[in-house]
Length: 301
Ligand code: RIB
Ligand code: CA
Image 1: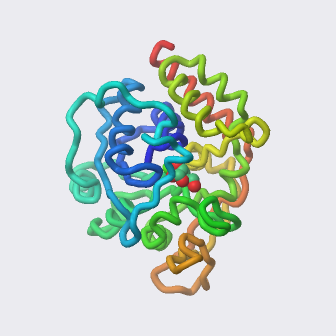
Image 2: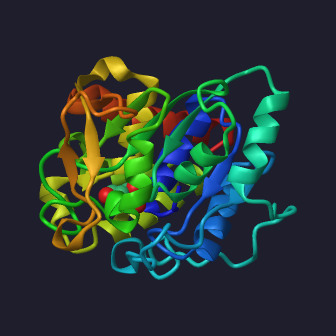
């Protein structure tokens, strides 16, 4: 993840509902030092410092880093600046180095939910001796069959590192792609931002950050695109989404950088991914809010 405002909402929903075994941060919305610190701060605020955070890639595989401070704020959390550095020891090892050995020692397979540029995931797939064994699959927030939010045809996570995104869409494990096709539909109503403000420190952080994210006022009518939280909901409740198998690649050339293209299904070494093409907005947004409420109540707020 590249926290990032919607990454924060995604993390809190995941902490409330899933067995979060660890985080890897990546440069994307803001630089790696910031996303790494933000990941640790978000866990600390939720009283979950025991969840390990690994610092991942500082830049895409080939392109230079493209960030989005105008959307997520200079430090990635809207106007928020954390007064003190996050407490606890900061891991130094890269996730693609640490995780294969860690997973080899554990019996429980894992599922990756990737909500930033795919650089870490591509490197991990290259480092896993037998990719199929420890991974039950990868849920990816990224891409779009129709549309783009960086260019008319490219979504941010795939635009920042199109080569990595292409590697992930060819991964030898089940991949689910949750792109703008559904995250632009399941928008959080502005009224929910105000509800969050009443849910303790976690809710206030989210309300402030989402308020900043929607500060130009359009969100009061259109709602807020909380992309990454929708991806977590898609992993937890795939039944709320309509899925279509597609064999895909990601362009990295010129004006098509980050664009998802359909390729003939008979491409060797590139199986179909499950693409979310529709979503039941109501249950997804209620689940996200209920998740944060559960987390906040657990913190006594
Ligand atoms: O295009 C939306 C994606 O880009 C989200 O993951 C958001 O956090 C940004 O990283
Ligand atoms: Ca993100």
